[in-house]
Image (tube, rainbow, N blue to C red; front, side, top):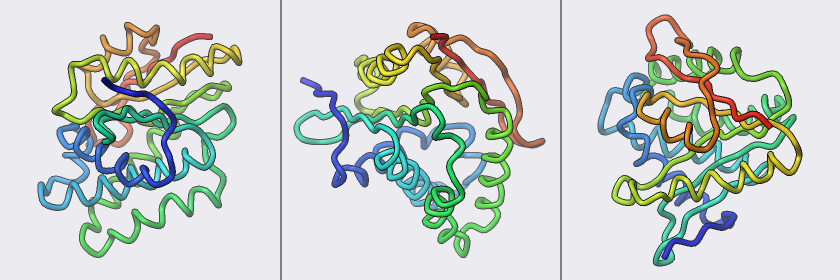
Length: 201
């Protein structure tokens, strides 16, 4: 039986580890960090920083089975994206610490993130920054359970939901929850494409 609830502070590391495994096969993460050895380290740092920020300023919902985190969704409420300079520095610090082991990957990641940020929805919205499920638990409708609390918050406030996905196979999944593709674009000249999706209020 899977329980969906808000994450506790001591579960953020588990959220980061779960996201790292969920996104290991992503075209974007493999492009940013081709090394199979280093990619899990980089992904844990990236997703950990994002989850810490959302835990403080937004919402992190987790899927729990047998006392373990098997999935999570990371949301930011309206007006909290883009982050303030102080939040951005706090988020970047653990990622920049990886520069000595993967300097070119860090540069690619920052350029990619800037390219995505420039196309971000300007209207007020709830932003689904990340949704991930442990590979062994995928296909059990856990993603749908995790996305619903953020949608409910957005509906109660009468604002849209917004997300980006780098996997074309995710489009039908998000479509089932009312998201429609609003744009397909390439954030940097040599990166994989990304799809922006909006769920109207």
